[in-house]
Image (cartoon, rainbow, N blue to C red; front, side, top):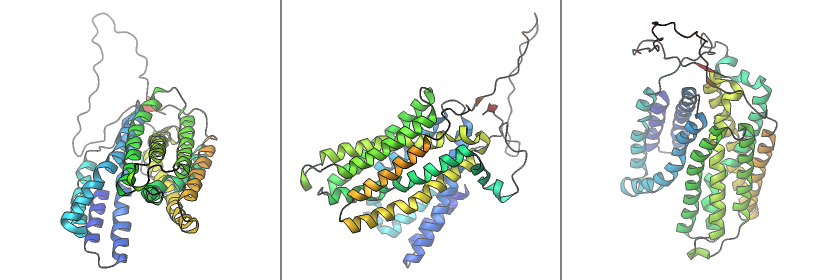
Length: 363
């Protein structure tokens, strides 16, 4: 809820900006902090609500990213043409404020294994103690490297298509098909992961490796058709990249309960976002630098894909199987005697000031 307020204020502040410094502070610092505060608790709380089909739930939630790539681009252009960039930012601030009532709907759950009191030390409060676990440290290193290449297409896929000779509509189509593949793969891979046919750590490593290979393909394929065409080979490569990148997104969060336990999900989600962002600080600027030095984005996508492949290789050091976080088995109870009533399920009615609901889970 606080994140929604901060993000909204960041957009509103940016609408009245008089210099780039104002935009850096409003859009980058204030709004960015708000989005971080909104994303980590929302996704962490979602994972605590589900013991079965958890990865599918995460994938369904993350599908909104791909859908927004399709819907927001034309909507934002319409707002810019109608109200100008200042008016568009004000309207975005109003829309973002809706995160606050959405946050009010996320009722925290008290689960077995949760600490009896909030952590007091900074090490525990920020979840930094998770890095003392070998499996999480391996996961963290691989995630930083993958983050270094994962965000490059978000910034440079359309400019790459333009550099290859496609027109504006062709470049937009390349981005669109990648977004469609990304959104569909998030949902499909969430379902696949919950079937248990492939261990989650192995599925994570494979999806990461396919993402890296997809970036290589985007960087290497030729464009057929020129400015008036649709760039068939590049479209195919963009779809392949979108499918692989979309399959990685739910897995990187779905593997966390087995690594840190369900009680550490919210802190671990925040740390994963930080790790991906650390890689993201390197990737797009490095990609732009390589483009300036070489004259095109081929080397940029090859380097980005290599970072993702290296990070995926590090994931192979994770345990092959992880503990399952599922519903706890109820204690054994002898069958009722003749005439004895069956036990009545316990139902807790919640009040606004009452205790949080509990859900029996084990990990």
